[in-house]
Image 1: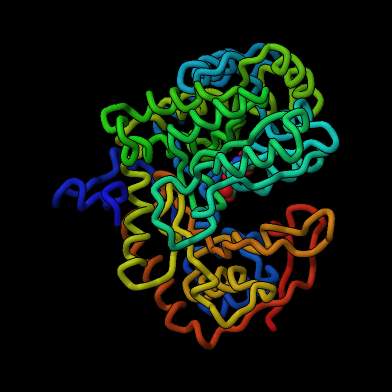
Image 2: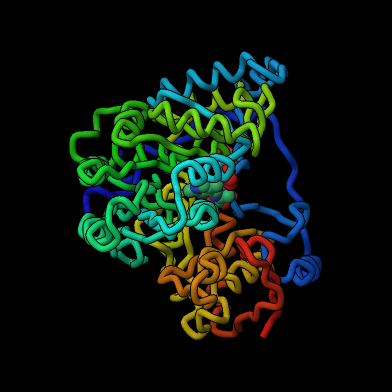
Length: 469
Ligand code: PLI
């Protein structure tokens, strides 16, 4: 393993990290029997999205909107200015985005996909091509609905779950250049860059790479937009792994990274430690003008965009908390703690361990289940059955069908994501989770795949239903 990706324990000798907070309020968890879980997963069509949360013990479905807010954020909720227009909390939020992300103009939205919708409608014309460092489900569907086609230009290492490349989120500049040569820069309104690439296993992109991407794109008059959803976490990886950044703060790194981009969309439900919220921010007054006009059609007035005043206040505070180095060290440290246990026990996961989740490699977990029998979907269901732990499929079901051919897309990565909500679970929950994965792994040879019995047209992973083969 390279120096870049030594574990926390190795880096700091024998001194452990701990969360920079203590617990003030608790929420009881439900325990279920195997019989109850069998009934629940059958009723859910073997899709963990269709389970009721009351039937779940440790919920690792997503880190989206599942964070625990701080006492400061809850106090901020009481300062909600619920005016229809010109809420004081909007101006606090706008100032926080400008200060920490550095963009000039801010449009609030109810969550990330609201912002994706606006930017796709403003920038994409029929027949356009959007290059990016791996697709994300909602991002790509908005790009396609606006008339675009997404092309993946991430480095090859990102598709290899065993590669130890420290920045598997990087763009392959040769692939990008070839695409520009092939389709023409005038067909490429922007390149779509994500921090800690979700579908690649939460893998970061380096500062050097974004600088190169910006230089290449701007030479051809192509804009660079950032999916900033988990960019503060990406900044932590740059601090840890990239030469020249060890002594810079997460806050400084985040702002520098954003300075190489023309704007960003944000699902504030992740990095920013709130249960709902999002924004679009840009530097171009013209783009801002169009987005601000569209937001009133699809989201809400341009000073709330679908959020309550109190939500915007909690978000402004959450942004500040998300760039604290101690917070990120504990957040990513907890994910790594779980991943390292699984590594020790020889369970196949995506390497290096990512920022927001540990990704089980279902192809190596169940080599006997072909991809069109949904190995990752199967694994997520088996883990729930064993222990009540809920993860999420990130493989062939999430990848959906090619709109041109109508066939399944067959992604190289067939994964189950164990996503860690921020500031919610303890190390003991991570131990219980690792042990449950081990129990399912020990039963792997007897496990069979699934067939899809109901398939919605868009984003099928949310609502598809399955039955045992
Ligand atoms: O769920 P939204 O609409 O607030 O955000 C959409 C979205 C955009 N970009 C990225 C990288 C995401 O991860 C994302 C949402 N992710 C979810 C819901 C997740 O479970 O990962």
